Length: 174
Image (tube, rainbow, N blue to C red):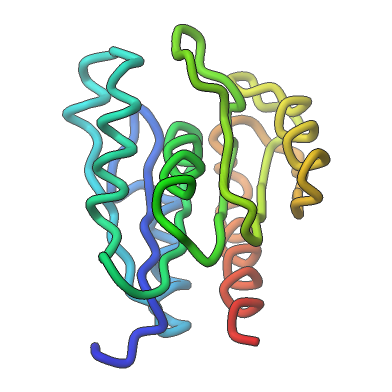
């Protein structure tokens, strides 16, 4: 599809996969708005349970992005963490981060991301990544932050996440 607006790199979380509900919903939105998308498979890396594999995960996300053209990084949980780090190495148009951990126990790098339009969705009851970390991160950058009554999986808010993502992609059109 030669008229694509760009590539969305969709990164799934730990104990998940490329066909996960949230990244699949985002892929549908991207396609409807004329963006291509790719969903790197990190399951082999995740199976090691080795936090140092985060660097390999980030490298895989970067490898999935085209060398030229517009890129948006999006992901959930570990996929959001990786998306942020990838954005520091590959220029991107925007970031969409769901249930982002601002730190990973045992991993030296804290969460960081390029200063691009960024939208976060986080559950008030997130039992894995406490909401206060996401609030502090978003506040420090002035990012858009959607807080919803949900847990880490955001399973009651898949459509909500998809609509927030649609809004981010539409904002890139002008």
